[in-house]
Image 1 (tube, chains in turn purple, cyan):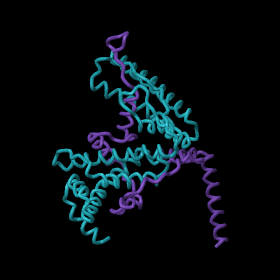
Image 2 (tube, each protein chain N blue to C red; image 1 turned 135 degrees about the vertical axis):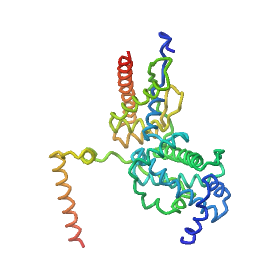
Image 3 (cartoon, each protein chain N blue to C red; image 1 turned 120 degrees about the vertical axis):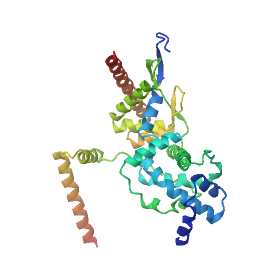
Image 4 (cartoon, each protein chain N blue to C red; image 1 turned 30 degrees about the vertical axis):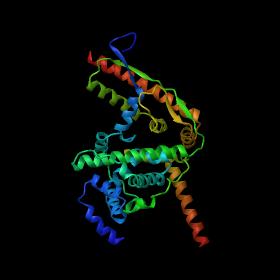
Length: 122
Length: 227
């Protein structure tokens, strides 16, 4: 109940955001019902290929008795905007902008010249 | 390795909690094989859960995410004796109880990994005592509608805002008016987003203000539509 109006009450927005993130799979499940919901959600997604490190049934032995390695945070890529544009175009099937097409041509030229340089070194 | 693979079959019929009981016995190779069977059953779930939740980005890359999966299972097996059975003989219930337990271990590892990157131990107070005023006699359906609206507003937020909310929510403590974030986590997140810890607080504050305005507007629209 709010002091002014007994028909109204306050509800915690932070708790609502936390619940919404969990129901979207952007925060980790906190109970068995949420695990069940996560299982259903994952079953409906295209299965992600399991990385090589996780494929062996004995992979967990490599972590046994060791501390989780400390890895530095990765900053935003300088290509973020470019990559997002590519991802957007891939999702929607839309045409790439001239700017992105030019960037792709530049990347291709850079990759080709790098290969040529490597060939010369060999 | 082949011999181990053959022996792995012997645990294929066992329920998840029985596997953990075998692991807890720390009976050499037999416990290791029970652990391997358990790992095979649940690793894809944990990996997919972390991957689809965007935790590779939170942790700083796919290698870090794989580390968390491997270490979550290694820690679970090391502490298998601490697992409290769910009290059901049903395979599905046991599976979900075990996965919930492993996810809890992974969550702690993620929190610790984020805290370890910078050695200063202090907390940033996140001033977002952001309450919504709603009908006192809110039904369950209205409550779900409210959650749906919050989810919809979240979808419309930038990746940066979602990233800040997602990371700070890893440290969410229910019922506390002022949520806190370890200083080092704020620093690490700021580094990742190429900004300052003060700005992280500001991004979160703005995100909450945006959420509050959008949710209140939608609630108002829904209530007016009902009249």
